[in-house]
Every structure is written in C-alpha cells, then in structure tokens.
Length: 125
Image (cartoon, rainbow, N blue to C red; front, side, top):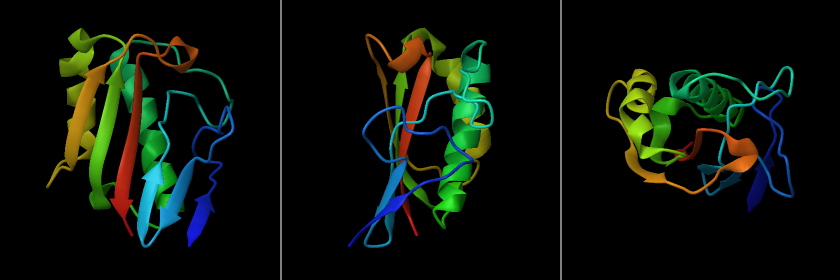
C-alpha cells in the first residue's frame, strides 16, 4: 500500500508530485532543491550553501517520514556543474559520516528554478 508523505519541514512540492512516498517500509523522496521551507524562498549562495539547505530539508523530510539519514540506502545527486562535486561532497559527507549510502552523481543541463543542486533519496523504515 502506498502512503503519501507530506512535511512542513521540507520544501513544498512545486508541481503534481509528493514530497515522499512510503511503500513496504521503504521511503522514496522526490528531489529536494534548496528552498527554505519556512519562507518558501530559494536559498541564495554557492554550492555549499545550497547543498546544506538541501540536506537539512532532506533530513527533516526523512525524520517526518519515520526514518532518518542513517537509514538512507541510495541517493542521487544532480549538479548543475560537475566542478562543484568536491565542494558538494564536503557538505554531503557531514550528513553521512558512517556507512554512507550508495550514490550516483550526475551533471544535468538545468535544474528547477536554476538551482545548483538537487538530491533525492531512498531509505528503509
């Protein structure tokens, strides 16, 4: 059975999709971009600032889903510029300090709202 997850601690969906979906004790998040959930405004700044906001929101979304960053088994990182990989990785590694999940990281032509980074995750519950 599919359960739709909605959280005020992560950016609201900006289209016809759910923030996260739970199926069979697995949580699948949509991509999270650097929007401040309190203001609804895009966070301005370099890749480190944007990655921090994304991971903070992703963590809150997972917590509100009944799981945590420690239970993430796979992430996908979408970068506007692969030259930002190292700086993004510095922030990313602070959220996944032990037994990090599997991960893919790709450069894309464009992201919603022209952000620098978007991250999605799959976690066990």
